[in-house]
Amino acid sequence: MSQTSRDRLLLGIAILLLWQLSTAWLKLLDSQLFPQPLQVLHLLFEDREVFLKSLLSSFNLLFWGCSLATLLAIPLGLIVGWNRRLRLAIEPATNVLGPIPPIVYIPYAIAILPTFTQSSVFIIFVGAFWPLFMNTVAGVESLEKGIVDSARTIGVSRKSMLIHILLPGAMPHIISGGAISLVLAFILLTAAEMIGATSGLGWYVKYFSDFADYPRVVAGIIVIGAVVLTLMTIYQRFTGYLLRWRKQ
Image 1 (cartoon, rainbow, N blue to C red):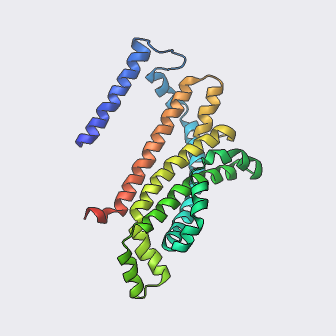
Image 2: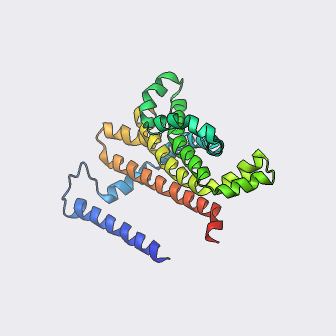
């Protein structure tokens, strides 16, 4: 086990001990709002089937929203970043639409789109699209002009320019934007599920908070945190593999 892994393990143990100390032993916190660790652990096991169903529901929405954003944001970002005239033309619209919090679209998405699934996928798509698109454009802009000019000089086709020159060159920026998109997409997913879903991790927390069942609320929050940590770890491993050439 590496030193970093040991440090993280010790930190986790310290947090659990502090939690146990403040709730079960010294009773410093309200027992209704702050359940004991063993109580939450029991609920994690007891509601495992509900959590599994919620995970599948949440991942379905997250997959489609992020997939659509990736399929559109990266190609469009490469094209816009490469074409200076097009980039300058849409820059005002990007500066206006990009910073708008996607959560404000939730009421309209629910009202306009026929199903909750479609409205949730749309909200996740909007949230994941802009960071990925803007970072892709920035990645293309950051490329050395000499590389692009050399590719043009030797007659590289547009398709090859996009796939073999611009995409690898912009990849570090794309990966940074992807990390932001993934976190933002999960936040929006949870928010959308809290408003109108009948399943999902956000729905689980909202449903039991309405009944003041705070032990289950804490259990749901822990599961959400574990899922986010797992997703980000997998993403970092995958992107580390894609950028392995930088270490070399």
